[in-house]
Length: 287
Image (cartoon, rainbow, N blue to C red; front, side, top):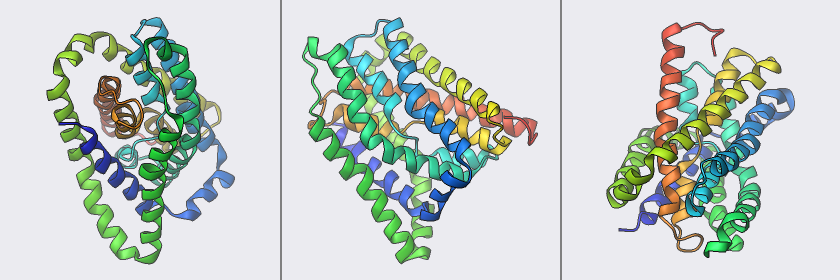
C-alpha cells in the first residue's frame, strides 16, 4: 500500500482546518507586534534548514536521508501547534497566524531550498527534483484547502466552528495511523537507521528551539509569546514532507520520508515534555 494515498487526504484536511480558524485580521499582528513573528519565522524558515544542512553533513547522511532531513526542516509549522500553545499557556492567535504565514511563505522557499539541496547531494546519485510538479502539488494541497477553509469560515461561521472541532480531534489520530502504516512497511530501514537519524532529528529540534527561545528573550517577547515561538519552531508539518517525498510526481521515495516520520515522533516527545514542565511549574514567567 502506497502511503501517499493516506497522507494526501490527511494533509488536505489539516490545511483546510487551518483555514477554518484563520481570520484575515490576524495578519494585522505582523504590523502591530512584529518581533514574535520575526523571531519565529526566522527560526523556522532560516535556522531549521541551516541546522539540517549542518547535521546532514556532520553525520554524513546518505543523499536520500540528507534530502529528507532538509525537507522536513523546510516545511511550515504543524497544524497541531495551536493545541500545544494552548496547553502551554501560549498565544494561540499568534500560533495560528504563524502557521498560516509559514504555510504561505514556504510555497516559495521549499522549491528554492530543495532544488539547491538536490543539486548539492542528489543529482550525483540520480535524485532529481521536478520543481514545477512540486509547486503545483503544494498549491493544490496547501494553499487551496486553506483558502476554502477561510471561505467557509466567513460564509458559515457556526458550521466552520463545528467542523474545526471535529477535525482538531481527528488530526492526531490520523497522523498516528500514517506513522503506524509507514513503520509497518519500512520497519527494517527505520530500525537500521534510527540511531543516526534519531540523533539528527532530535538535535535539529533542540538546537532550533533553543536558539529561537534565546532570540525571543533578546527581543523581549512576553512569556506567552516565547512559549508559542518555541512550539512553532519545533513543530513542523511532517505530513507535507511525507507527501513531497513519497509523491510519484516529485521524489517518489518513501525512504526519503523516514526523517519526517522520526521528526514527527521526536517533536511530539520534546514538545509534550516542554508543555508538561510548563504546566507543572505553572509560573507565567517560565518559558
